[in-house]
Image (cartoon, rainbow, N blue to C red; front, side, top):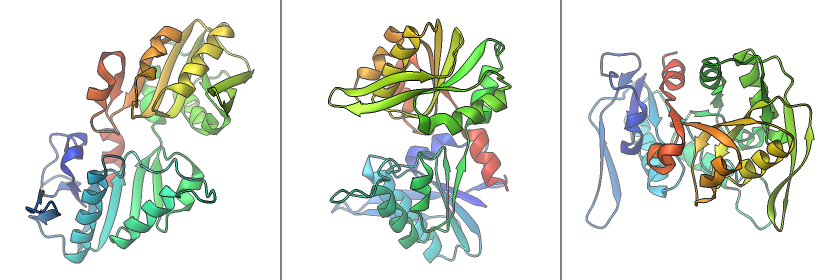
Length: 295
């Protein structure tokens, strides 16, 4: 396999990845014509080869256009198969077919199909509903091994995993199982009202040390409410592990104020280190990506 990356995502690949490695690194360059039109040129033949495009559909939208144009260019130049590697699958939260509203995930799937993409590889897709809207296979890699390895650096005997809502239960179970945490998974009941995210009853028992596991840390509203609910339940130490850090607005910076002593995300969003600043730890997804692409 040859991996071609849009510029914003090149940093997600290991520095030692070269043309002689497996997978191999492809060369491409992007630019714009004087009128602003995007163009891409590949400097390595894709004819008859399986190729991967590493990028994102998430804002800014130039990234999505770069992925689509590169995939189309590879297919037009003879690539036998094109895999879109999109660590953070933008538009996946637009997965409800509500009347009068855009269905962003179906739109994204249609665009990828039109560009010649045969398969999508992502990390911790938002929901099974999102996957169902894609006309090609979607492989969602679990971050559980990465999170579990970090948890095992300390003691897990008095640690429990809590889901901020029922939708996060499956990923929480995966992390707990991988880390060898025996305490049952607890979860919070969540509702959205005029006042925003509000957590209600805690279902299950919690330990003094608790880790909240979720897929996206965006505005922080869900996790802020969850931390407050856990503190009321007597939890003394709260850690947060979220796969994707998009960090919109400023409210998420209040998480340490409501008891979050540790916040950890992956680098699935390329500029996450700039956005997160010093209060968030960032883990590399390179082991997950390279393991998937080497097969």
